[in-house]
Length: 373
Image (cartoon, rainbow, N blue to C red; front, top):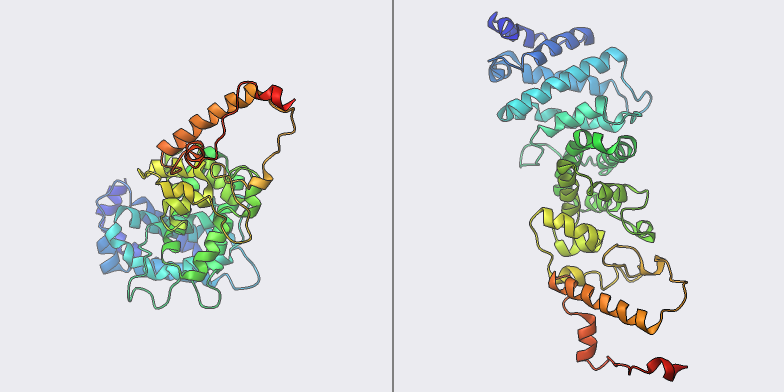
């Protein structure tokens, strides 16, 4: 039936009728055009070049963005929201199925971001209009090429952080609301959008994104990944079976760390970093392990290189003192672990071997216990 409709030759006139002030008409027209994106031979290039489809989609996105003032109501009327949703779904399909046509919608980038920044985050953060806006943005080429934008739509002069702040708040709300098996189809595009924004961000917004998305001191009161912060929740999701979700979070953390394995290890701990880097086919160098040997700043405490937890926050052993035999077994176990860490490039030298070489190792006689009594 869809192809039969396309064969009537009416689709061009329908695309022209998308430019309307009536949200009811807009909703119907956009829905019909959306249905023609499947299983037809319709040329959307012709609709864009000869029937103003791109221009009319941009018109409706701008119109709806202006329905949300800077202050006042933070939601659209039901009919307006439904019509806007249909237009965004149409844009997504046209751009996804015809990547070479996506530039026809570039001028709407600013208005889509404005809409996201002004909308309230709903209880189901990505099931409504915000989710469709992020989907639509995902099919556009958002790289800031010379002459593409008059000024960056991501970092407005009045507040360079407003867009990234809202998008990260949406991500935080989504991670807290949805079940793990629901997240892959919902937040991967949002994470990819944040990566795109970060890679072209000036220093201020970059630092702001790092502050919001990377573990902070408060995360390090426990092993990283166990606190209630967004960074910990994201890192804990890298242990799920979801390949696309793990890949997206891995890429985000890697980019936020300047694409440096050493800095990534310092930011999130060897435990998480080793898995994320292995998934990218990157081997951790010796310098990565040594990155944790020093503090992040003059005032920060040292961190456990494996868990990322502060040394002074780790639980203290309050049990009975070990016997000499238990100490020897523990020493042997630690020696083996140090050897594995050295073999994997995490440390440059086994600390025990280093102590022997430097003359700081003393082997006690078998009757050492009796001598101490």
